[in-house]
Length: 423
Image (cartoon, rainbow, N blue to C red):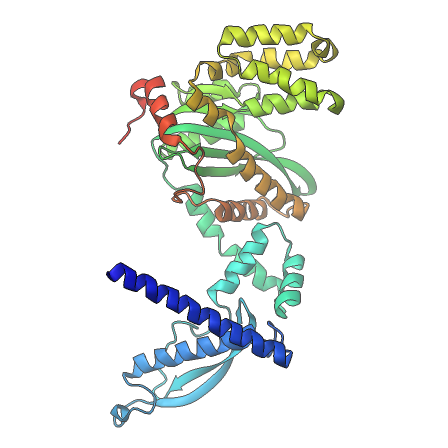
């Protein structure tokens, strides 16, 4: 019965809010008022809500409401207001900040010396995470909110995440991971001259089937297995004791670096990488024939059947036309074939690199919009903010790798025996 009453109250409250919104919009239409900017509808609503909240804080501080006779002789009372302009999500809003005669009122909503509400900082960080430059952010805020902000302000807001980035990069990790995907993306960084540097990315799938970015590292020019060894060692030092499957590209020396870090790990060459590498080596007009031919290899039920499919492809017209594709698959064969031994539930999760690709796509977009970065730290700030916006490691549904993860986890438990401790 109580649940029904709460539901009815919620519906009634929602209808009341809708009614108020409709009334305000009708008033704005009748008067021709804008939504944002000085005198705008949302600006005025924001001002009214904040001032009412500040007045409530003052009443709590004094111990009595405005006009209440209980305040007579209390030793402190209201002493007018002071104007203060703060930056909010609705733009610049000038507030009347209440004062008390003793001068010891400390507003919590709009603290002393604060010129921005938390939501405004979040808006700047969100724009920065999308790869917008300082100039673009200033232009956007001026156009949308009618607010002029200085480059120093934007720098201070974004620099505030550096400590958070360091803590995130050094946080302890789970001991056991069913899958870790490792990859590198390239960003342009100015170091004397503008050069392309790899940013090493590790994405893990935890025991609950949720993805999490384990870290970001900027390397020297050129992706190398030596740097990957240092990255993997850092993950080991942060608590990762064992990984069932490590999915990677075909970089020379990388499998040795993985097995040196986690001796029991199965090194799996990413099927997506192999397929894309094959398509890059061929003409677009042949892709409709090439894709099913490659699928016959990686979707084969056994390693023997996959080998036969590769032999058939090599003997076909496509194989004769593109011998480099055959060579690519044969050179990657030792790290590709573990995939063929996995049961269907594990194959689906390992093959479907969509979750890693979605992260990479977002990161590439953020870096591409900026062109190049003045320093490695500037690049890491943008990439970290992009990751923070995209991934919440504790989200129940948004970050799930597979719809039927429990089935896959049971297969992992059987396939990898006692290495996974399922609770």
